[in-house]
Amino acid sequence: MTDIKKRQEKISNQVKVFTSEEVAIIKNTVCKDATDLELSFFLNVSKAYGLNPFLKEIWSYKDLKNNLIVFAGRDGFLAKAQRDPRWNGIASDIVREGERFELNVAQGQISHSKDVASRNKILGAYAICRPKGVEIPTIEWADFETYNKNHNVWKSDPEAMIKKVAEVHALKKAYGISGLQAEEDYDTSSGKAITIDHEDKAALRTIGYLDSLISKSTLETDVKESLYEKIADPTTTHMELEEIEKQVKDAQQKLF
Image 1 (cartoon, rainbow, N blue to C red):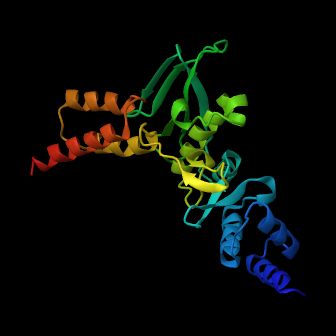
Image 2 (spheres, one colour; image 1 turned 90 degrees about the vertical axis):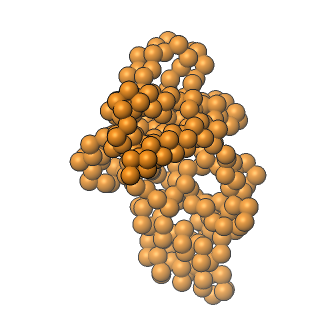
Image 3 (tube, helix red, strand yellow; image 1 turned 45 degrees about the vertical axis):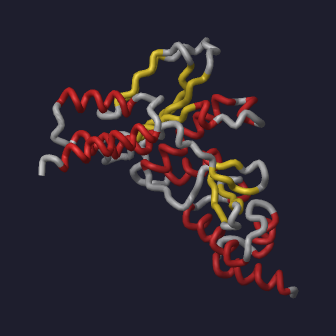
């Protein structure tokens, strides 16, 4: 037995899910260029989350510093969430220019009048889910211009792709799925995982925190309502959200 086969057999015995032959296939496909330690880590993450590398539910890339980044697709995040006893479904849709769309983060509500015949410009997509026992739903908005990679499936089926972004972010946050990354947040066209800077647009995964911060503050009601409207606006940037956080915290500190 060669040294490579011995190492694959050892890794297979450690993970106790994949055969040595399957380990070899994974090493040459969805976990390329990984060291034995990284390969073992990847397989254990697959095992822990119950995701199948052969169904492309989980895979990996190296970043520019040669660190291993483990990814899962929307179906992988969905499979993990559906095994949670709190699973309670997820709703999502795209929003096109001209459609009535309102988002009330404070109450966890979305109002969307969809025009099924419209082929207007896609503004983005939303996803909403509320695990059983949770009072306020998790809402995620994905801005199309921010995430559009304008190639491959993004050109042929942009509706499905932007919905996946919103759904993955919602599932990840609502069900506390850590250790897995969404490929839509990275540029992998070069074979390396390069983080895409989405800081010019507001990500709703930060808004739940701000909503809680504002609601617990002693600010006047009209000031709170103004801030709620600002954080619910999809065009609000991360910098503006950080300014709102500072404003609320500064106002509270002045009371003590």
